[in-house]
Length: 391
Image (cartoon, rainbow, N blue to C red; front, side):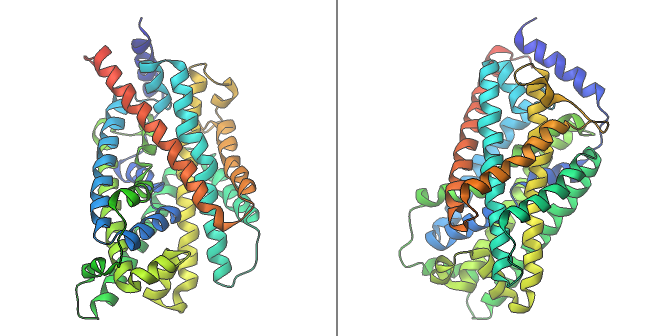
């Protein structure tokens, strides 16, 4: 039996052995869970203030690239519907070492840096609100402890939590965008004209990376393919529906922010999403927005805790990492891997020293690792199309 057929056979057995639970709404929530976060909104608003009309071009290009990425991951996930995700795809197509590199570079390393940046933002938002001074590490331990406990209870609990968190954040972003557009329209000119007021817009190529970071992560739903009720129908729909929703909502937020704050005001803000919320709703709504910031961070952390341990579980089942990472609790959750992934953001916070000014290096490190994983995923798809066209 060839390597590809062996992996495909194991995937079929694993899929039959698990009880499907997740529908389209839950899968869409997981697909959007990593994207609708504070750090993504910060990078996107920075791009809008810097590029003007070029922001829309960058959004269009980024959306096309992420749509191609979603199509590739959907094809791979439906070919091998197992918890291993990218690791299983790369093992079948490129060999075991490529599988290990893809999972660790694309998901374990970003779990070290991206969630740490989110937790730093939460601490800064609460500090700006005038709340109690709590060290970022204390925020991280508390929030991670709650989400870890919920994730260890099983996939159904994880899905309910993720669906609630994601849609609360989406509704908040829709409200923020609508309020910003309404406030800007009172000046008598269409909000999108503000994009032309950027004095010296930077090239599209210079902000494309910022916009791309705001859309990275739609494929986090693929390790949950074995838990989907109708994976062939719902998995591609979840990724494309989630991507389209996030692109539309965040584009409206970006244009509304430029119109309401002005390009100069938006570029001068250290936390542009916080500045937009205060301009749109006033000081009275700051506490509500701080709560939403915590919810957005929880959405990202919950998605990471739900997906990345299952990638490690897949590697353990293939004998590529320590078998203990594939050990399941009575709820079918890889509990050792989940606890290990939960500890990664704490290491990132220690490295950053709790300094919110070190968010950008965290985001750059996470995005760079993700791009390497995406390259390996597309290489795996091309190899499998050539070696196993019947699949």
